[in-house]
Length: 416
Image (cartoon, rainbow, N blue to C red):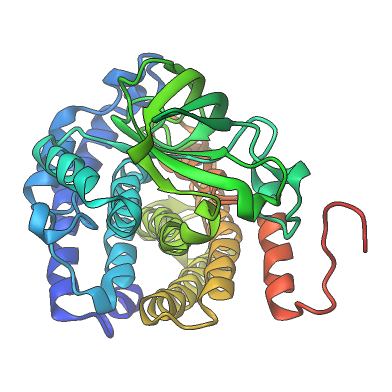
């Protein structure tokens, strides 16, 4: 089939082999669990939603520790195609469940950040622990109740600074504040926390990042945010009250946001690929359904209205995959257009895959709205991507700003 051919085309042999192993894992472990335990998604006990065995199998086949340096036991990837590999593997996992994909990709992205920013003694302490424990999750704590996507607008003034504050007292940084909508925030064992350390300068000059273990006194996991979709990743809200971390747990002082590009750029690619995996799952289920379910005396695919929708779904998936491949290659190559391509992928995947899933629901008729049928879950999962890694509107602003830096508006704060 065309969609499968496009997946194969241009993939390095190593990436293709990893993709095949991941697909087997998803088909044999993830999809059967989701189908047989669809009610588990709605458990109000977050710890019990996803069995640890699934993470253990992911660890056994080597896809949990992508991004962890090989010297510490991580799965080696060719650095020339690392982000492209991330994209292929996260798409496959998301085809089974995007929440599970979200759980694991945070490990990859934060590991990339730590290997670039963390001092050697912290890498030696934490990377072996991440590798040893299949349930070890990582979280990136940036979003706050009063500052989320708007922080990504080009408005670099003190008023846009983090509300979470860190003050150096002796040989410790004391942090106070709150983080919200944090992927893996509810059950991570290690956090990267962003805080304002200089309220007199702009956000890009006054934001620092810190490595914080979960058991640090003063850190409280306030709650698990009960989301519409992606519910097998436990999104959390975290409070810091006079939380003291050692001075040497500082990752970046002042310029943490600009130095976190090694996290954000792969993150946009992975976001698009997770979204794509949801769309592929919706298309595969729908393609099977319309060729086997009869209405009006003939199978659905023979009705022109149904056939046109299926063609639209396939075309949207291919356009997302094509742009995703282009953007991922640009990130791996360090191309100057990588940032704008990453934002284009995030935007296009968010909107195109949601439309794919809407077609899937409608082609399934009443069955598409049934909880135990599995199609409405994909629609809910796809809707989450409109707001992840920045809203689609803020992403559009960033694209225009990149294309027309001299004339585009600032979108926040007074004009100068």
